[in-house]
Amino acid sequence: MPQRVTRKTGTMLDAAGWPLRGEEGAAVVALGGGHGLSATLRALRHVTHRLTAVVTVADDGGSSGRLRREFDCLPPGDLRMALASLCDDSEWGLTWRDVLQHRFAGHGELDNHALGNLLILALWQLLDDEIKGLDWVGRLLAIHGRVVPMSASPLVIEADVVDGGRRRRVSGQVAVATSTGRLENVSVVPTDADAHPEAVRAIERADWVVMGPGSWYTSVLPHLILPAMRQALERTRARKAVVLNLTVQRGETDGMSAADHLRVLAEYAPGLRLDTVVADPMAVGDVDDLQRVASDLGASLLLRQVRTGESICHHDPLRLAAAFRDAFDGVVSDLDT
View (cartoon, rainbow, N blue to C red):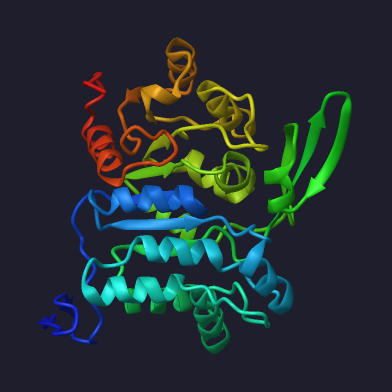
């Protein structure tokens, strides 16, 4: 196919005028949502261009929640963040990334809406196709990879919150994430929602599937609760990696150890087998316990410093990318952390 270089971005264009996506590296699918998925994607961009983000669609807060309620659409916010995380590093890509992430500040209807959310919604309404709309935004940003929703149906997360002797059922991502107490019996509504065919297809064709980091019960776990997604993850021949969080999330995972995060995955997906668990040693209180649980799931434990500097709150894209390279290459011995 004829190719040319655009003067605006310096990237290769195909005959139709769209930026060419790279084909280097393993085929990787990253599951999650929000800031956790964004951290994974920023790292994986340094490892492969054959990258698909499968995004949780249960957000009911902020701009996404308002658009979801008004237009009965998928919440676009986490999809927007994933697209922004995969943008090209050219002036064109970085500028459009900032435009996509821009939030209006005012006193009217547009206050706190992200422009990217409105752009995505406009394309959905024009094209009547979520995937085509997201692909068009990806082309505009010249992203490395693809972004798809985990389901074509907007989902609602529900959970029992146990606090002392009290048990109550809460509904909605924001309510679940901010509840005080232990979360049990987490589910998604509608219970018969299908996984998006493009998400299932990507998982089936992947060399690696990556889960985490992120909000464990509201961004990571929904991929294992939705039956069709769980079955695809259990059925695929792809190797699977889990990236653990650097700290507990107030309200959602208070009091949970690193090993407890894996136990939650095993509880909701007993048939799930893993290959690698990536953890920062400063975020692990009991390495032996984590090692045992990882081994029970079939995984090797990869201890690497993946945090940013002295902070333990954020993943460093380059350090996490190096950890992914080690995982994909089978280098699991302990290095200097």
